[in-house]
Image (tube, rainbow, N blue to C red; front, side, top):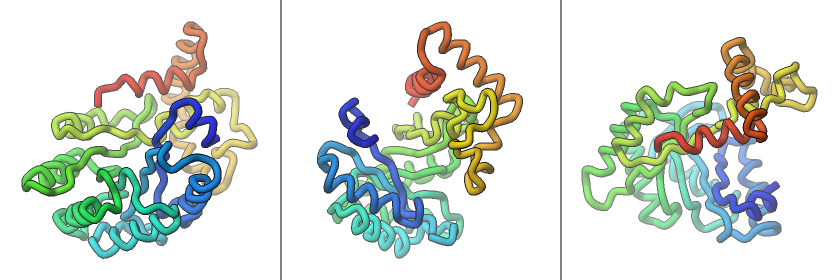
Length: 239
């Protein structure tokens, strides 16, 4: 998959320290040693959620987690590092100081945030612009697809106003926009597994079904897959 992705011109590979308890980064690190050249991909990872699922965006946790990610990936730096979630228990200026330290030390090239509300993103981006030398917020990850458009209310305007790029996760509506659930739940799908069924089920209701059917109809008329329609739509959204 990674070879086909790179051969097709793909660059960005996104992971996080908590994905599969670090196994995602270890696997990617092995692929970077054995399958593709490090310089051919843009590596993004995230820190700020503990192994127990608790938010911790303190300077101590973030920098320690970044060092652990670098070790698992087997690289000296990542290209893009995100704060995985907003932590209301940690002052935002402390969280942002960890991004400054990571960029200044060369452990990451650029910094961003993930799943921040619009006001949280605007506050973080403004704080980083307020003083020369701080690492600017360059990207904001958010779930965004034809089935999940709430980011258009506040997150997208905040990103556009702040000059921050939107990096959508699950742009295929957790797989539902591929159309594979139109006639049921395939046995090899995530919705058929005990640990991921609840992740997919919110998008299997009637409202989402009607959207998927519209996407499939558009695909039939254009001679492309529903997947291509869904990705083309989000690619061309503002930001």
